[in-house]
Image 1 (cartoon, rainbow, N blue to C red):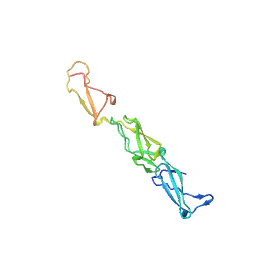
Image 2 (tube, rainbow, N blue to C red):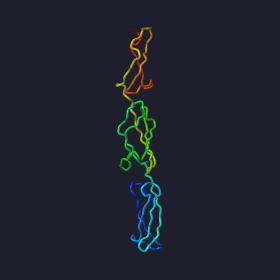
Image 3 (cartoon, rainbow, N blue to C red):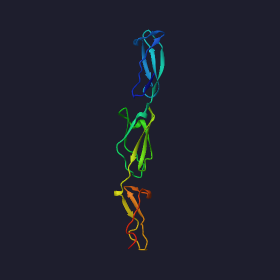
Image 4 (cartoon, rainbow, N blue to C red):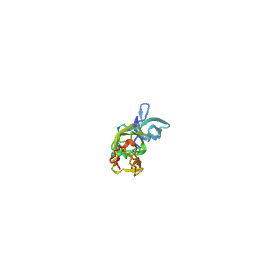
Length: 187
């Protein structure tokens, strides 16, 4: 028989025959081994009372498949310039899985837009489940604009000063924003 990993000992019921004779439970003692984790487990039947000797049979404990798991991400994270790894829960059959039974990987999780998180089963778990989440653009209203020089000499042409833009600890890149200047031609 095949059983699915449950975290508890798998103890399949056993019928013991000697030829055509079905033995009573009082005629033997059962001993299970390797019967918790996924893999090959065994049950040994050892005779007692009017029977002696023993015989062993193997059975299989299969891994739990995560392909039907749900990944719940509570909030849409906001772009920070760093890789985003949002808080999440992994549910299988309405139970929250411990983080130790899977590994996590991400795709496209730095820039604003659509990202993907994938969990891969480990140990007694196998298979994968994925979920798409959205990284929202950061709002520049709280950004800090630092101009390299604060005064310039009139030269008749429009002047665009050198500057940096920081949002929190993140130094923004030129492709993170657009620039417009006004009143930058005349003294």
